[in-house]
Amino acid sequence: MTWTFTDAGPGFVVLSGELPDTSGELAVAFADDADTAQTLADASLNVGITAARDTLAQSWHDWAATTQLPPAQPGDPTNLTDALRRSATVPRVHEDRSYPGAIVAGLTIPWGDTTNNPGGYHLVWPRDAVETGFALLALGHTDDAARLLTYLAGQQQNDGHWMQNFFPDGTPVLPRHTTRRNRAAGHAGRQDR
Image 1 (cartoon, rainbow, N blue to C red):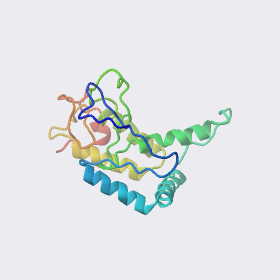
Image 2 (image 1 turned 180 degrees about the vertical axis):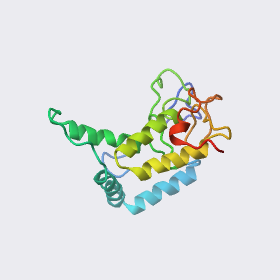
Image 3 (image 1 turned 90 degrees about the vertical axis):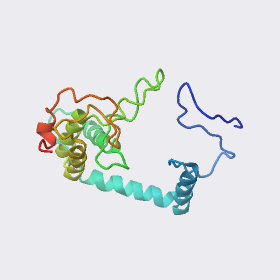
């Protein structure tokens, strides 16, 4: 690939590249500028893929070991426990790594092939996040649920409401309150700010 562009409009280029060889290690890093991304990629390569993989895998194994699934019931499908275990990972995957406790509704925008709208499901929707917190509690992950609650309390407005949705850094997308103003607040936030 030898072509270059100054922008990707209309639309987004998520990631594109060409490798010089058919095998090797590739480090992908994202940052606010190219130099910082290069530094992060170099650091990742210096640590090595085995150490990075092992650290990540151990983190997931430790988390999964503390997951409390509901007991099997007579008549349950034979693969239900495996499906529940995989499903239990979804809330954790959706937590932002830069803003602990910020759990987005989804990792994609379902209409991404037709619009450049920066909003969508990859935002924190407080109403949905509260339900995610209940799921985390039911799975026995009280630390994860507490981190979510702490994050949401930090985003709550002075009069007790939350914005309808916002980016993980707290920047609101839509300038309006949640559709069910304080319904979620009664479950998961404080109203005394």
